[in-house]
Length: 287
Image (cartoon, helix red, strand yellow):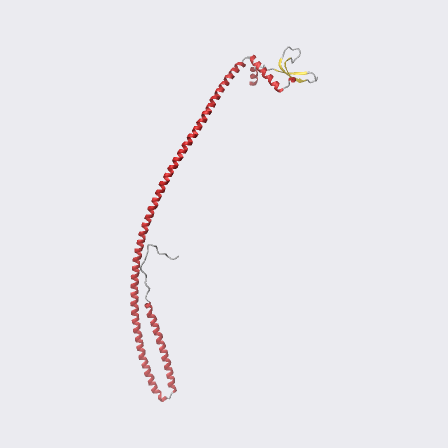
């Protein structure tokens, strides 16, 4: 991802490109040396050709041509020295110019870097300051909104609490009223039941007083026994006020007719006494 300069930074300085003159002396020197080598090669070839041609001529012209060659060599040597001196001078001048240009480039680069550093520091400082101010504004806005939200929530919670308290109070009153009503009704029923039980106790007491008389109790028992026999047996299966034993003057209130063992037509009576003493019955049950 490419680096993106922040909005707060706006650098106005740029680093200039270095002048290519720093590398010029080396190229110039190489070109000069190559030219000298070519010239020397051409001269040597020409000398060899000249020597060959001279060797083919007569010996009498040899000394004259040799002298001419010697003069040509001396002339070439002198020219070569001048060329070398010129090349050295040019090289020295180019080197001085290159050093000067390099020094100027270094100074310009140093100034540019210093200016860029100052500008960058200033921009960063301004950016930090603006960022701090924006963050402070954001913090104040957030605190204000949070406080507003907190106050709104407090109001809503207070309303909810009041609503809940009102509903609870109303519900509690309703339920307590219903409960008191039910309790009152139950107490009224209990009171009514207690009255009935009191009446029943009074009736039981009266009945106990009535049943304390042996004759009255016997008459009541006889009446109940007759009702039971009427519900369970037919009139032909039992008899009332009958003698159950021959030669005896005693009568029983009720007797059940049973078939005999030996003679089919002979009847056997099972006596039932409804006047059995209750004291003897309780003593029998307690034994």
